[in-house]
Structures are given as structure tokens and as C-alpha cells.
Image (tube, rainbow, N blue to C red; front, side):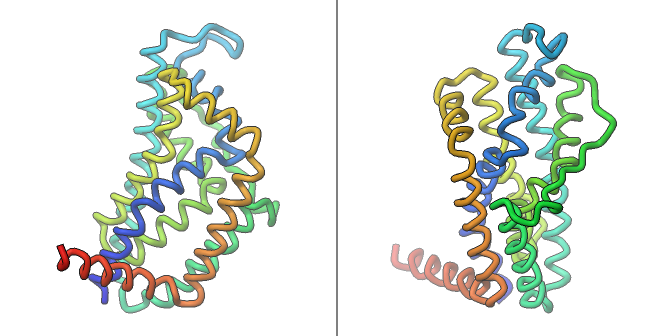
Length: 244
């Protein structure tokens, strides 16, 4: 059962983690601040100053993404490892995690206002390439309450999988989903800029859709259907491989 759930979590978790990262980018506490993040890591001389060359900005964005990716992957590794030792309580932990995901889905939609606060550390690294990875790490820690709805869903999959490697992989894929838009905008890709503008215009719809999805996942976890779905997915995949 443990192996089935772990493999099912991998099959389901990778696309979910990628989508969760993209959804986090589109959240109200990230999307409107993208120009500020990029200006900071690009080394703007002043808030209204001129930005450094595009190549330097792209490198700064990559280092920024690397900074928060390291934090998320480390956390995913620890949570996945914990799942290995807590396997006998997997069902209870899944139901508890489901309650958390359900509540955070409501938060993502816009309810439970007090839980939407963001912790912003007073200390800030210097601007430019040197400070970019440190700013990424600060972002990962300080913006955790805002990113919590999607991160909790991913870490719950890692906990159920009971594997440090699975936890690290899911967190890494999540970081790709969150980080690629930063890099694409820094490079100057037109589609990325247009997509960001579209998301800003429809940010409320994005929050409702993303929060609704988290509520559904939370209900599945609380009801016990989530673990069954993971096992069923792995059984289907095993039959498909044998048929090839």
C-alpha cells in the first residue's frame, strides 16, 4: 500500500505541483509585485531608476528562483522523510492535512482575512546579483503564509508518499512552476508579459478557480477518497504498462 500510494503521488503530484507553482505566481501577493522583485534583483539604482542590461536581469531572476527553490526543496525533503516514519498514521495525517488544505483554499478565495497576512522580514539583502539568491530565500520564508494554500497541497502529497526524494522532486517541480514566469518576463518574452497582464485583469477569477480546486482536494483528503485515488491511479498505470 505504501509503495502504491507513493507511486500514485508521483504520477498525480508532478502535474499538480507544476500547476500549483503557476497558481502561486498568479496570487495577489506575488503577481502585482513582480516588477519590484525583478527591479531588485536586476540592481536598479533607485525605485524609478534605469534597469541594468537584460542579460544581467535574467541572471538575477534565475538566482532569485534558485534561492527560493533551495528553501522549498529542503522543506519538501524533510516532510517526505517524516512521511516515511509516520506511515502507520497516514490515513489520519491525510485527513488532518485535508482540513488544512480546505481552510487554505477558502483563504485563497478571499475568506478568513486574518490568515492572509504575510510575514515580511525586516532584514533585506542588498540589490543586484549578490543579493538575488538571498532575496529568493527571504521570499520563500516571508511569503509562506500567502503561498501556503498551494504549498500545503504539495507537501501533503510528499507526506503521503513517504519519501524524501519524492518530497524534494515535488517541491522542485513546484519551484519550476513558480519560477519560470519570473525568468520569462526577465528575458523579455512577449507572451510572458501578455500573460501577466491577462492574469492581472482576471486575478479574481484565478483566485476563485484555484481556491475552488484546493477546496475540492481538501474534501477528498478529509473523506478518505484521496488515498484511494492515488492507489487507483497507480494500479491503472501498472495495468497500462503491462499492456504495452
